[in-house]
Length: 311
Image (cartoon, rainbow, N blue to C red; front, side, top):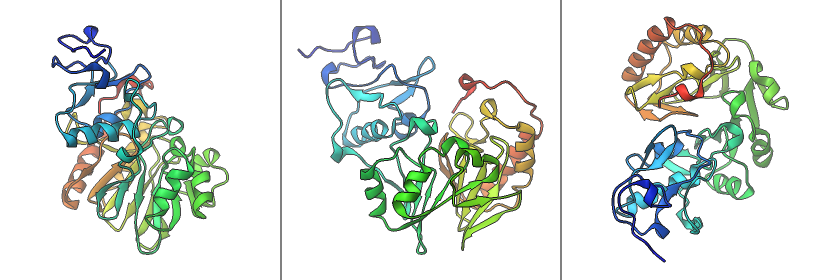
């Protein structure tokens, strides 16, 4: 039977923390598989928040737009933890690939094999780009292919390499990775070498950016888009560009050197694998990147600590 949710989470199996009456059988909740990756909070701000080191539903949706936001969070969640009890997700509610602006799409369907990272599809006249990858399925590949021919799959670093080969083979595309992380994709078709920028195709440059990993890369496209992997991201906590200091695997000091070389990079969209996205005028992005470089220069190595991340 339906029963009303009133007051504390303990009174309701849906574990929603909002003290509103709802019919629990239809209520959204986040189950115990949540790994606190932040993806659902990016897609449903105000509806999903962090509570005691994991995502929780803050309140139930009040209209169709909020219902769609929770569905997007559910289809993106790497552990499929955002859900309703005994109510399967409807395929027609899947918004991915989700348009961020004309030609730019968030892929969704994040994979636990890429640490739940976001991935992106960018449409271009010379061939589309897939930057990092969602979980692999034939249905998803067909969906992305409907937006045009994918000619290149760009891997930002080792942590996001898991499905790269399968997507590249499916599309007949070239697979790119930096030599510093080549052991994560040893069958890559194209290897970015050294510290100098490398041309992928006209308007697409790979900028080696060691720090988070030895082979981390920023991909700058048409002086508009920066696909940053795990090197830098937009933080809702600080309202600025930040690094994932507590999970910098290779060297925070080398990352500071990479940032010091970034003064001439031009872009308007910051599109990371983890952390939030942001669009700002290129001059504002450059100003914030310079500020980040100054802050990171003063940092010193610390132990890896996943719980230290504050998105």
